[in-house]
Length: 272
Image 1: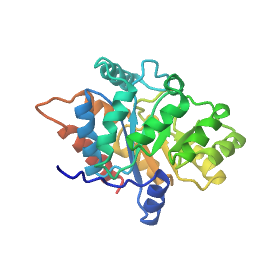
Image 2 (image 1 turned 135 degrees about the vertical axis):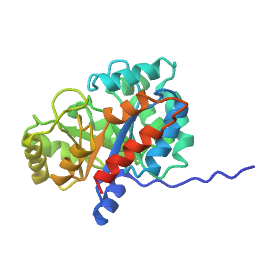
Image 3 (image 1 turned 45 degrees about the horizontal axis):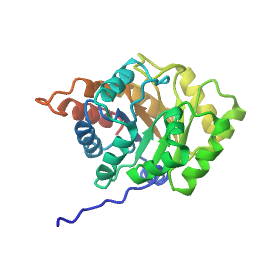
């Protein structure tokens, strides 16, 4: 029988600690699981690790994804058309994470968690080998049970901070968030923005005055120059979602993941 070579993956916290020691910036790509199918998802995760992703966000497809823009909504629709469930994805992920050293964060919606049962869902994610969980529509006031379950199972629950958050609320979120803090660069849904103004920089500075936890910025970052600009504002990492998902949208068996890999290489190079 062939022996399985299982790789130990670091936590989100440990990953950011090591990056800080090395004075390196985190590239955090997002892709939708099952788009166009789970085989391609597996290949894409392996490609992202090979091209130097620091952490990978893996979105569970959901039909009512209120925080997502049209690109990611379309990806979720394509994945759901394959008749795959969140549990199917997490079971498949278990065999993939055994070969990856890059920590994976599961991105999902609160209703999907509630439908599965909070404890059951957390245990499924832990079994999958993922190291983090991010729920964009999780109310802070309802997060305590989930936070405790995640903490007791060594799964880090990453909380989001919106630009409209008061200093008091930022403090509360910063104290509870595990692994890092996710700053939403723009109000509204995810998607591709043409530019970022000084308000985003001011927002980053406001948060950094309140907490020393690693800060990553996402929602709307679409190209290398935007990612490099956000890096220059002193955060720990940047998240690109729709831009990576769009690369998978044009996937073909003939071309494989060449365009996807090239895009990741381009972003990584700009952040070096």
